[in-house]
Length: 291
Image (cartoon, rainbow, N blue to C red; front, side):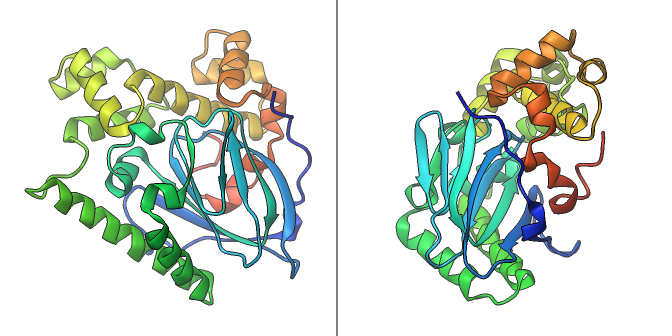
């Protein structure tokens, strides 16, 4: 069973975010660097988020390790949408975290079914040569603004390659699937698959099959994940679990407790104190105010 989060001193971490004009659709990023000269040992519980996460380990001699349900990735890793009980640890100096909305992740990685819950070494997904070139470019950059620009260039090229690889200039995700994801996110997970299928003109069976094959999870599971994310941030903002359950559309506090356990292995009280969420208002300021 995953240990509950221990206090983490963010005062020792510098957080950098891109300028508003920097970026790609569905892609957000933040840079984390230790104020200390040498890498610092980290042991932190990560909380599921409705995005595929890339973690680039940019420190010479550092040793970032992410583990989930028996799977471990060392160095730069990619984390799927439903990682379960997930921890990041090791000696870490500088790290670039990139959040890819599922539609953007499909453009970068191709169909995301194999990434739906796994922690994978980025080298195993992209290939060792491509990963080492990306890491070298990011490490050569002097400032975080330069690193963000390098990351945008790398991801932009991979998105273009993904479209070319499908032929006819078709994107890797159907418009109906992308619409369903956007509506799920806008509705904070409180949506019905039948209604979304009606909006797309597809049957529920077809929508579920295409959504899963392209984004890695079913529409129903995606709605649960988005609703959980909303609830987790309300807990982190200090709201009582009973109020969060009511405001997030759960049947009752017990329902909330079960969902939090299912996604993280933690209690609502522990999630409320999770350092992974505590830094969100700094690293992701335009998406994590109490919703």
